[in-house]
Amino acid sequence: MTEKVTAGLNWDSIDFDKHFLPGLSVDTVIFGFHDNGLMVLLLRYKGTDAYALPGGFIYHDESGEDAAKRVLQERTGLSDIFLEQFQTFSDTGRSDPHFFKDIMAARGLKPAENHFLLRRFVSIGYYALVDYAKAVPTSDDAADECTWHDLNNLPHLIQDHSRIIETALITLREDLNKKLVGFNLLPDTFTISELQALYETVLEKKFLRTSFQRTMLSLGVLEMVSKKTGVAHKSPYLYRFVKD
Amino acid sequence: MTEKVTAGLNWDSIDFDKHFLPGLSVDTVIFGFHDNGLMVLLLRYKGTDAYALPGGFIYHDESGEDAAKRVLQERTGLSDIFLEQFQTFSDTGRSDPHFFKDIMAARGLKPAENHFLLRRFVSIGYYALVDYAKAVPTSDDAADECTWHDLNNLPHLIQDHSRIIETALITLREDLNKKLVGFNLLPDTFTISELQALYETVLEKKFLRTSFQRTMLSLGVLEMVSKKTGVAHKSPYLYRFVKD
Image (tube, rainbow over all chains, first blue to last red; front, top):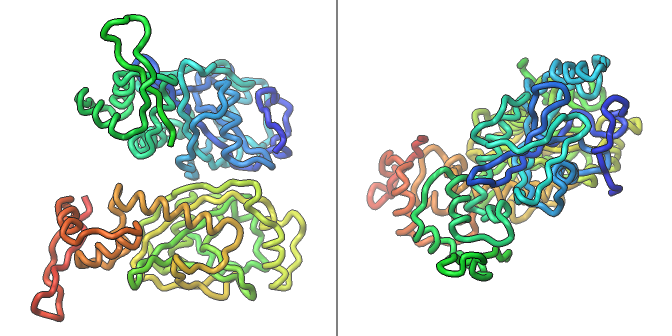
């Protein structure tokens, strides 16, 4: 596949039909973990109060997964990230042509009735887990800002994007135990306390410290690295996740 | 939504673009349980050896889920069936225009290069669990036959349909424990032995009879109905699944 970069795409002049599959988009729910809270990356459309998930369209010679990776790379600067498809959203009412008409009007554009953006869209949802400290949120041509938002305090989102986030969160909770994906939200090395805080935040429940530690260590996926630097005495051990 | 019935659609004359979303399809993996084997429903395209999953296109005013329900109803005669979206398939190489060209040539048709069926397709995968005894496999206009096939002895399938079945099976295995979906593959009432045979078939492992029975009964989702009729003495109890 040739390299696809949409960051430089000019919405005002691009021939969407020429480049992209019609009526199909990807939306990415990018989760980060910060201050014991789960965060999600949102864009705010230029000159509006409309918040949305980072998303994009699929080039004619690109898979949905590659499109999602591209969106993720452009919005966070990160590649080689945990990314998983979780659901495709195809309700007939989910695309509101008025929304994109307003967005384009805010840019002084008056699209034709059958414009690419005004048609019904089906969207493939992906969720990504990134190290909050490593991601560099970066806006695109259509947005004024790209920032982290606390999952418990989200602004009003366009279309069905709230539902997309809820569905991603359900999948994340399932995958946290089933596939041990939580490590992707932590730095390369971490303490058991940090791991426990992550699990408690995502699963919204408390664990007993001793039993959590015992369970995690018994899984055989943690490798001890060293004692935490700084406070020499009584500092907790640092661990890293050993993949397979 | 108005009622959508494709069974009567004539492939030779229909204006696909007018009715359906472009480049998007649904494929349904319909599982049945018979003779302690897991079965899957396949179509054979008219005048060819090409086997395929039952699938269809999405009407402009229809959701993907409603399209899958429609396919399921038309191919099995059943409605109100366990149906779950599991993955969307969007690899660039998955659509082979030669395949549909051959299919249409077998019908004496010569489609234009940009014909609806010859474009790249992204397909939303759904899996369904049906009571084998209740389903009435029914062919469509494009197929010579619609029949059950043993999952362990499948014919050669078109495009990525083998991969779609494998992915559906992985999801079924996960959901069997997580969501207790197995009951959808059994008659309304069943013995613990029948339930155990189903679990052993799907999960491809053996369980100890006593511990399987104890586990299943402890879940609180089985209701005893009566002793199995017929052999009066020593006949096992019949159970039914109590939803929520």
